[in-house]
Length: 130
Image (cartoon, rainbow, N blue to C red; front, side):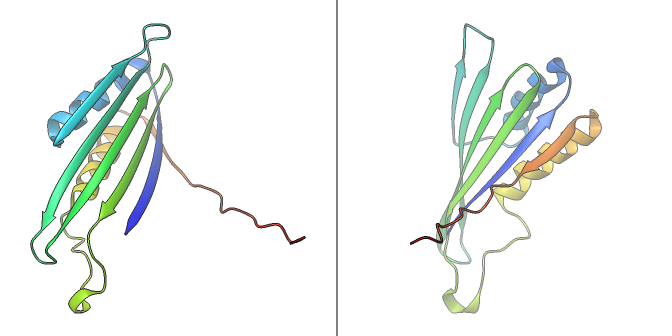
């Protein structure tokens, strides 16, 4: 099981710069890497979250990549792991790490008047000539 969700957050630079440290303070990752670009003051954060699902005896991993530029934050969430279809159960959706991260982003955006947009990938088009 693997899924990717992408968000773009627009707003004032000072508010955008506060969002990522607050996210990692609120929902603490297992691993965190930060890169600061000296040329244009951009920042890139890579955080890895792990959550053990005792009910299905599997670990779910969430990789969160946040690119902070002057006028937007681009958030990419990649969820991997877990099991589907065993014992007729699915992953428990009531409390998982991905929901915590997405809820924080939506709440922070709403509280500080930021514009939040989900980025949807276009499906690949196959050649009809083949």
